[in-house]
Amino acid sequence: MLGEKLENVRKTAPLIHNITNYVTANDCANILLACGASPTMADDAAEVEEITALSGALNINIGTLNAMVTGMFLAGKRANALGRPVVLDPVGAGASRLRTDTARRLIEAIRFTVIRGNISEIKTLASGSGTTKGVDADAADAVTEETLETAVAFVKAFAGKTGAVAAVTGAIDLVSDAERTFVIRNGRPLMGCVTGTGCMLSAMTAAYLAANPECPLEAAAAAVCAMGVCGEIAQERLRPEEGNATYRNRLIDAVYHLDAKTLEGRARYEIR
Image (cartoon, rainbow, N blue to C red; front, side, top):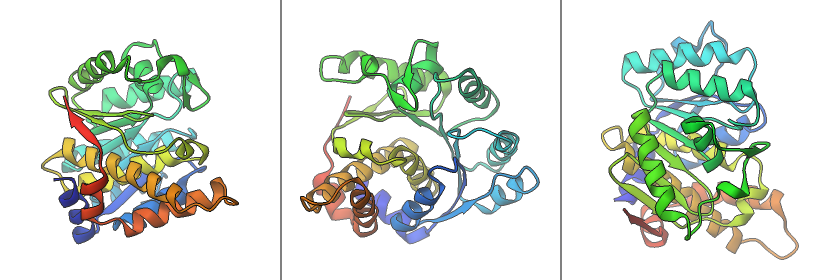
């Protein structure tokens, strides 16, 4: 099932429009090329609607908010009008009023296919109760085996409230459409030592959605599993003298070489 979603990305090579932060834009572009898609980056209000119309999906990331906010709303509404999938990555929601308010306004104005963030960001959007450490999740919010049942119920409720697939990523990843939740246990802690792995995942999720528009839950789960599996492969290939910079490159290489058989064989998940 998940492998087919990966193969569809490589077969269709969708163009993905990213309105994303300048810290990780290059990595988002490279991860899209690695997974078989094609990136375009445009945030000026004068052209975002045209670029969105050419693209298979839209990825909106609020990591570095500035004048691009106007473009986010224009592009999102255009994608909705055209029936294209839209991903929201609410980076740092809860860290500042600007980020939190912008993310909430986007959710009110745009119909998102997937909202992907860490547990603190999603809690902030759901109830204002989450806290963040910069753009990272607060340890108090972490999804653990002990809190898993409560976390699954929370993510299902958030998906139901927003109408979007909720993808909450961390040590344990949860991907839910309000009825079913993929509980995913792939990945490595070292992924947190590379800036932008979450941003890269959001971009890749948009590619999987564009290539598999009829099944957004499964497409999002496949993207999350793929990134986690590649995080494991990258660490396995890391030599003792190498660190997070090399790990970043090996992660992108692993995405480039990932095939359906490897994804199916290494993905560790259950559905609740």
